[in-house]
Length: 154
Image (cartoon, rainbow, N blue to C red):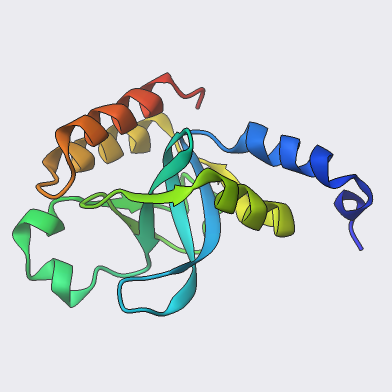
């Protein structure tokens, strides 16, 4: 039993909500495009009623590798600059994935260690460039996400 389990639920929720902001890396259990529910890492781009994210993948899939428009939106996150990472991975900036913030907070309250750490300023800039290169994300969403990342205290 960790010390965190001793606090009232409202306290834990407030702490998680305070940490949930643009530029943070989290884990979530979520349904992926193939229907599988997986524990995945995400970079948080913006938080309002929905938490806007980009998913991380260990490897670039063949599907993405064979599509130049999607491939140029893959951004490397390295262990050397992000010690909370187990291995170098890629952030898929070709698509923004929204999740209800209440769902994100609920999962993180059950698993507080899933709040992993912050991205660097350089990675923030690379993510914004990847988002801007996306042909599948609406410009207004890209602008909102990049604005939130640029205002984040990294």
